[in-house]
Image (cartoon, rainbow, N blue to C red):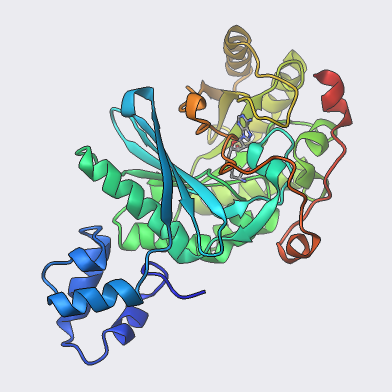
Length: 369
Ligand code: SAH
């Protein structure tokens, strides 16, 4: 695959500019990362050079569609990548911040049955350039609306910890070159312990989110198959060590599934886990969003509130998250880039990805539905 404009390091871009005066590199870097411009639009570069750069530094993302919801405050981008895979990015504008939700892989090998990306299976890892450019393109859109992207969450398609090299290099670019604070960058994981441990050794104190969804191994084995490899007790040890190393809050994502993980007993078990990390754990409750391949529905809002109150009364911090973009399939767990949900996992690709839980065993859930 040819290197795209946001794949290259500053040094590598310098090599592309070989023979040009030294200051051209600063101008190009500033054009790409401060002005968020295409090379052809970096107007302080000579015209002929701009044209050459535009062709040797292609864009990684071809826009396919852009869908808008919430009166313009949620924008979902569908991109096509080199090779034809598709991924999605979501820009969410709030009164006090603008957040980009980025994808780290085309598809996902983690096979969580309730997630549209998991239902579609894994296609490939994204490169640094493909990850960074999602944020740049969303930031260009924000700029047109007189807004500035302030937060980035790795909560789009894919499992960031299974592609941690490029995810981390992209994170360093967000921080060092796009000027985002580490405390405004969140990496979300299904619970891949080696990834959490690796993150704890890195310099930037980014936020960690763990997609927990169940607080006992029997239920979590079914909802989040990777739990069979990385069970809850060991996962909590890794979260605690992350907290000790980074002094960052750890958030637990909890998609509320009617009759499955919204019982009083679930709240009690979850509160025990939270109290151990107290006061640094925070639970985000999201009623399950509908996906084509999963029969169970989200918990009614009244019960979501009750569940939150119960957690709070048991000493755990919890917030009910407002769903963004459900009508354009842009909400949590709905990103599938138009893929049919029956796509078979490619065994070869699966064995190359870091952790590849076996699919299947959702029996209890089908019953619950
Ligand atoms: N693979 C990473 C990043 C994806 S983040 C991770 O699992 O954390 C996407 C978030 O949406 C995760 O918390 C995921 O569990 C949650 N999610 C998946 N399907 C969902 C659904 N149908 N409704 C609500 N949340 C869902």
